[in-house]
Length: 186
Image (cartoon, rainbow, N blue to C red):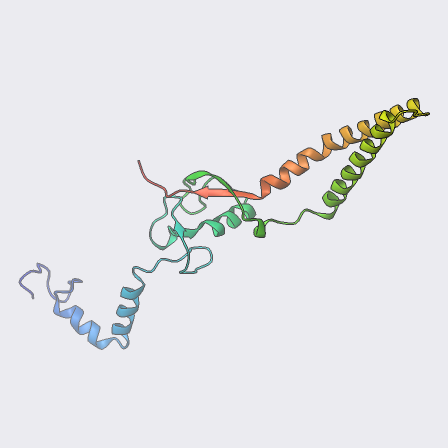
């Protein structure tokens, strides 16, 4: 029995006991296991993608290897998850510092119908402009027809924009992601 250890040597788990030295020597590969554990003790990696590279945040109360996560990985996880406010592991609310725009190279492409809507509205605006120029030109013969035409096109434009503006806003909102801050217990 060691002078610093109060337990009997065959029951003591501390490094001072002779038993732990005997166990260490008798288990094949224990030294390699200890070295592997020691070397991974301070390595940080993302709990979602398992990469050791990049900038990590700790947006919730998780500890240890579960604490570190890439902001981009967490945003993708939250987008696919049903719970966008709190961590599924520790159940604390994420510490969000706001939103930021994605770089243009990472923006998603609008769906085809949205692209056709934009083309339609651009052409409609051009037709309205041409119609107004015709109305303003001297000696215009068909003032009533042009006014009715302009009124109809403006009504179509207004109606379309009323339905499509929310889609456009939604598209731009999808190009923004959460900016996470490190979680601090108060």
